[in-house]
Length: 250
Image 1 (cartoon, helix red, strand yellow):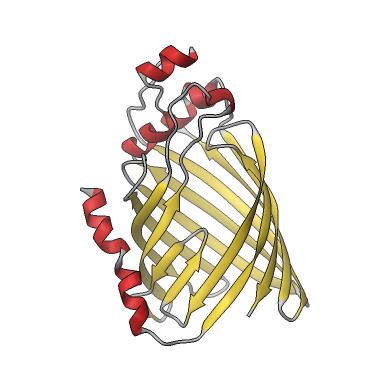
Image 2 (image 1 turned 180 degrees about the horizontal axis):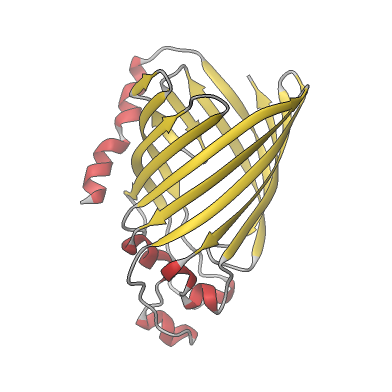
């Protein structure tokens, strides 16, 4: 049901793009991060990835966190947009080398934002439209960004995420087959779980078109995700991230 509904939602930004003719702005760059191998892992991996944050007028946006979205409603401090995103799965490497791989895939959903000043509040709902993930996920995020000196700004972003029972099962189930091959205890999540997070950044605009951003974040897994042998026996319920982003603005 979720996939059929959101498949229709997901194509809306693509259909709208040819009808729009507004200036493109934003930034492109490269990021280097240190983060867990997969959600729940205690092994960390360095990743070097492109970083893209684009806006097409006031209608379309594209970035790695929010995906490709179309602002279908914008009034005063409120914005509503359907979007297409991506959710990572889980590789069968390291401690989980004997598990079945979980393929990531595209998601579709809606994003509601309220931005009255330096703070903004965002509610995001999404569900998979491809890959091995199932169910739905809701995220409530607050963001604050403020300039502290010429060229310098800092930001803070607390968040609260709920993953449904099916979403939790996709990543934290230990099936009979996985248990037999790996020696882990069989485990079937019976409910969804909450993930609490907080992130921060410090940004230095060292030239008219260039900036360097340091970022860090930590999240806490709870409930049936925390109790999974994947986390309890082979991972960690506290997940951290640190990195740097070099960006060119235009």
